[in-house]
Length: 590
Image 1 (cartoon, rainbow, N blue to C red):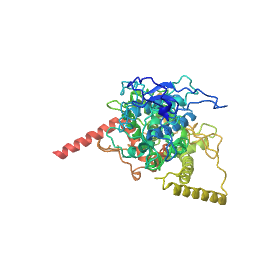
Image 2 (image 1 turned 30 degrees about the vertical axis):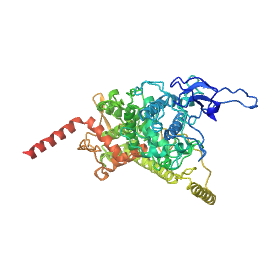
Image 3 (image 1 turned 60 degrees about the horizontal axis):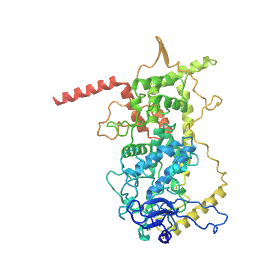
Image 4 (image 1 turned 120 degrees about the vertical axis):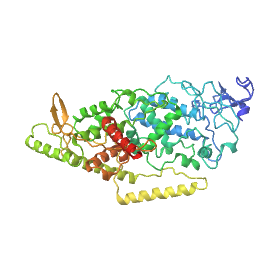
């Protein structure tokens, strides 16, 4: 039918000179030989047959209806683009600028499709088997500056097109060249997507397969490029609080994008994102994309350790005066330098900085400098501060470590309990159940109906309270105010009890310090050092557990970062231990 309607168009194709035309879903002519899509469209002569309606062209790209499932023909990469679009929209609602979605993330995704040969190349993986050629306007495919044609509108959700209403000057994306295939080729019995089975089995060297966790890597790289005020730990916490789509992201796919079979293993997630895992995927994505050097992290940027230290000092209710000490630690270790903080994926010695973990590690080192954290000195200093505060109630109170410990212990235990309850109550099964084949579909839907019915019955028996609206997400998990008598605020407390005047500068009364790691692991080890709680004081364990919960990371992960900060701060001590160890080795040889 499409060929008959296109017979009136008799011009030769500019690419292959053939005269064989078909019509796309939006009414444009395409060459059936080389799939070249022209700008010419079929004119509607008689519009009187359509009274009181507006003629609108809806570009659906590859989304032709299937006979089997009555859905669109779609590829796996379209599903991931839909998830990225949802996540970008969620980040924008959190206050991130629209440039992240319309420019940065959009370009990163285009780069991935080009590098993985799914689009913007001579022979995309989808058309290689059918021996068809995709139209290209660019001869350069590996250049970062190249601007190839857009893949498709991907269920009308192209990043550039989505911002067209707010930014009229944005160029409207061109449709993906339609690939004519037989019904047997397009219909996959084992997956809803066209390439679900092939995608799950694909193992090509040097090609990074996309996954749902890697969508978070794309989001973080975009945030880092824009130097936004969201750290990786914040991003993962927003995911956990369901402010950013992740676990059930596929539930928001259009109804026409059928999801079953192998698609379940690709898009269904059954675990929370882990900091270490996502961080590794960030490095993988940046390396695979050959991204250029990222913008510099200067002192005015949110990700600079000085600013993050200020943020986390407020978060854990520590005195404001500690900020000066953390700045000294940052300066002495050199971790605040632009060269150290710069992220350059293609550099020979690429440095990967965990900005939030590093800032928290600086605070831990500062606490050790002040209170030693050996289960002895911190309590002695607390006794002195307690006596002073009783005698001088009108003066500025001295910081009492014991009182702070009691307040934070209670607050963090309550927070942990709510967090564990929320995790236990989380429904991993979405509203739209997934099934492996059309045979399983009625059974799966029937089970889902039974589960929903039982939930309603139990909720009426328990007489549960109505669902409270979600609070807006915040970078702070704790809120400390002077008016709250049950949870006192220590921000304005003085450190005079732990500092002493020496000349024109203040120094710590504590002159001792113990290193968290005496000896680091060798280069072939996957970890920097080991962490066993029994080898460390209870105070140090509490501090690590407190910050680890705030960042949702493992305690050993933070301990490693603390050890690396100490290694840079106490170079002389580590050099002495290295010399001693080398001498003992020589003695053993002789």
